[in-house]
Length: 164
Image (cartoon, rainbow, N blue to C red):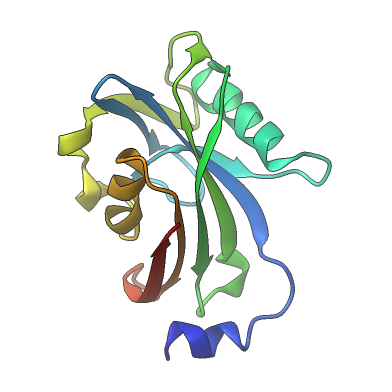
């Protein structure tokens, strides 16, 4: 099934979540997910938005909880819609932020183990497979809208990317 056909079968609003990448010099902070959805993968820091929060408030809260830093700025750079036909509840609209200013030093928590990577040495094989398509674009300063449909094995079945 193609992405455009699957989207016709989806009703309701996907859950909203944030994903943040701290950037310093030529490095980006990724964190190994230690539990829950995406366990065992490197990713940005973020998570689901609570009902009363804005997506920016959710991003700030998640960063504080997951790596113990306080964000000074959030720059929205992408919106990524994900679809999982085998488990529609996993679908979400992810707002991606780059962060250049924060207070504190990222530390490991029960949720995440942060680690700095050179932008040219990002471990895409240890990440969600969609990130190799859009993360280099946002790190180059581009704004992106994308949609990805995943199979049961977390492979990408179909996708669409637009550079704004």
